[in-house]
Structures are given as structure tokens and as C-alpha cells.
Image (cartoon, rainbow, N blue to C red; front, top):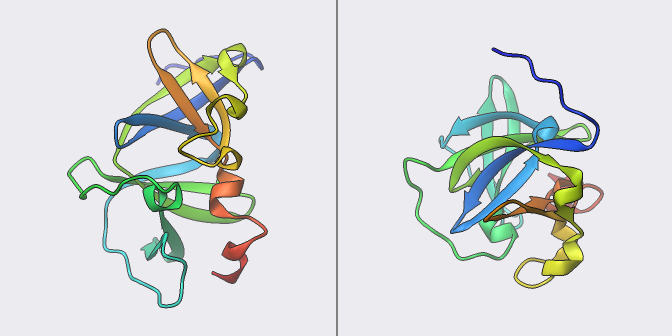
Length: 154
């Protein structure tokens, strides 16, 4: 594996799809990416909590990210993945439609989330990355996972 040096003005992102749009999270928060697996439902959890999985002896909650972001649902396909992310000390799985790529983007190409406060609550966004012919929505995992809110009860 070749070693690349990134400056402080660049961020490395894991890019994934939810429907037709592209979203991303910092690669520093991603632990691993898994194929969809058996998810055990847990009663009396919020509807966006799909259930829990056993990941090498650790039980992790799994979020239906589309439901959390109030996006239209789609069926699970061969491309559906669970991205395991770690925020603070909490590891959580997020169901996404497909993982596209890992990319590096210069921070000067990332706009404030205020420009897209529309279909997704602005608090769930940390920015919008501008590329040549596409836009990347950067997610604020602390807000999505609900650190300091209802996930403390999971």
C-alpha cells in the first residue's frame, strides 16, 4: 500500500450513497465497512434504530440512516452496506445504499451546511463539498447518532 501525505488543509472522506445523493463522513470516524448482516430488533427503540449486531463479540446499535434523515426508503440490495463509525466512545453501524469511494478534498472546497438547509435538517450536516461536477453532503455524526441525547439510553 502506497503511503500518501495529506496536508492539514485536506480531509479524507468515505463517500456513500443514500438514494441518488452522495454523502460522506470523515475516514477518521470509520472503523470498517460490512456487508449487510442479520440485525436483531430491539423493542422500544426509536424507529430509526434498526436493531443490534454482534461484531466480534461487541453488540453495536445499527441506525437506518435514511430513516434518521427522513429520506425515502429503498430495498436492501447487493450494494447495501453497514458503515461502522466511532463517535466519542460509541461505535454504531449505519445502513447505507452503497459505499462509493474514499477521497481527499481540500477544506476550501467545503461550504457551510447553511447553504442546503432543505431536505435534511441542517444540524445533521457539517458541510457541503464542491467537486468539479458533483456535490458531497458531509454528515455531522454527533448529531445523527445523538450523542448526549437518546443514544445514552441504548
